[in-house]
Amino acid sequence: MFTSSMTDEVKQLEEEIEAVKDKIDDPVMCEKVRQYIYAPKEIQGIYKADAGLLSEIIIVRLTYVILVSGGTSQPPCRDSTFG
Image (cartoon, rainbow, N blue to C red; front, side):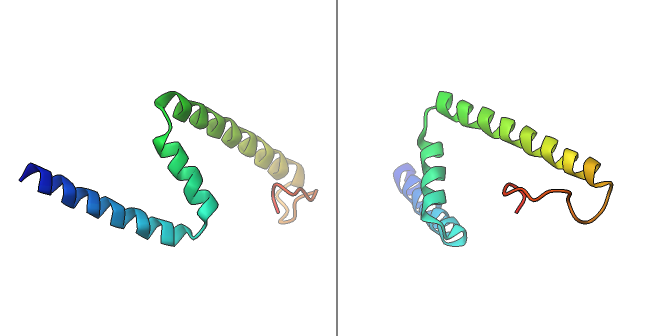
């Protein structure tokens, strides 16, 4: 009974994984997510730290653009980071 319950849970998770992969529709991104999920906790910690640093950089750059532009709808410069 316990084994069949776990088997059902695994099947349900596999279906959910496939649904997410279909929504993402990007094999490279799906592979990156898979690598993160199966990575050791230490490696996941490094990824999280890198993501936090990147978020801080983006926030600083956006704040700069907002302050320099003086609230206009057009940023003062074109940067590939912002499109």
